Length: 370
Length: 254
Image (cartoon, rainbow over all chains, first blue to last red; front, side, top):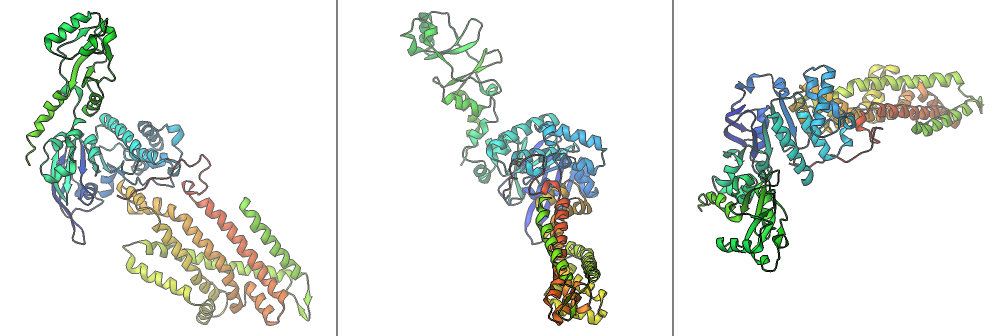
């Protein structure tokens, strides 16, 4: 647990980089410091491991004042990864990863075992990479080693300063996903700096949005998107914040239960009758085992001899855990404007429509007071 | 070992030339220095260079280190200036000065040469430490290395190739300057050349110059090997033998 209490930083030239910052990062929480460059986010991060001395205020880690600890021991208990990675070019990948274990005087074989473990964790086969040098790795591989290195001595807290900032978008996306998976398993307490709102929304449990050294809003991503506190926050998260918010929701949160389905073996006239009675233009079709097979549309029925003939197969289907932004893009490509949500056995468990999504997002409109 | 072929051939040629000159016996009315005299002079020359260089390394590397420390700037800057001045004073004047102060001879020559050899070492030590990427130093510090550990485990190993390159430069220059010192102090190969110039016997001048050149070439080659050998594997330009380069580190300003 990290607690900042009225922390300020005034540099020797008089600039006040951080002004009276107070916040708490709970144990196992992924907190993102977000803001434009020069907002004090990196300074705040570096005050936690005392790379930058605090001018005023206090920082506690698990209730202990960081000022009261030996600075080197403090840092050895905190994982640290930076944008420029800073791998030691004269040491092998294994030696780089073992930096903190070595500083902590772990026995050699334990260091070695740990390095192998961590390389596996970040998806780099140890046998191939242990003895390589940083200059022999690609940018993405170097950053993986950087992440492995900051996990070296299994610290409970990680500080990460734009660790995926200098990588191409595809690799960055992949590393973000992988890191989230790692975090799901390890449950570290993380302070993570970025200027990328998308990264913040994707990675953070909470987001601390800063401007000019001040904490403007500290909230979870959904709240930040749904209730931006002021104009600055709204501008920073962007005009497409509603779309960004979709990523935070999953199909199961929004889908409606299918009220009407039709079995493929039923007759065309039955189908027409059913659709007329409910004044619907389409209905999802299922086979004898209850598996979703596609859509029956009213206009196709006139010219078809059986429902199998009339069937429009679904181009894509969603799962309950599919993020809404992906589901929405499926909907835009679907003939009926709906997406079927299927469970693992391909049974229809719900339907997604524009109306359903709008109803969920309608909550936001209330905060849309200009 | 391939890189040794050319220097070795050159050195052999120069030794051959020396042998040829020595074998002349007499030129006109002058008796040429004999083999043993040439060998003693060469050895003296070598000693002079080695002693001066050794002192210059002992003094220059710490000065370079001090100059690179921001906290020690108050002493580092004057030291750097002093070193620069040492280099600006003409060789001959500097050596003349040291002989006046210390009396002509080996000691005066060593001190003069040492001052002259200092600058490349100081400057390269400073540049080598300065060239260590700030990100690497920040990472080292952020992971909990003490100042001493950052210096000994990160900065110095990374600066080492550059420091040795400086030593190599200063050593080669030193062999030449030592000839001048020899002229003044009457020791080493400089003595042979002085006599040769005085009596206008080209052969005698060559007899002193060729071994000096051979010495410079051999020392340079040896230090070149040392430089390569002491460069950490991850930094070698041709790369470690294990594999080829896959890409260069991504770097972007924040």
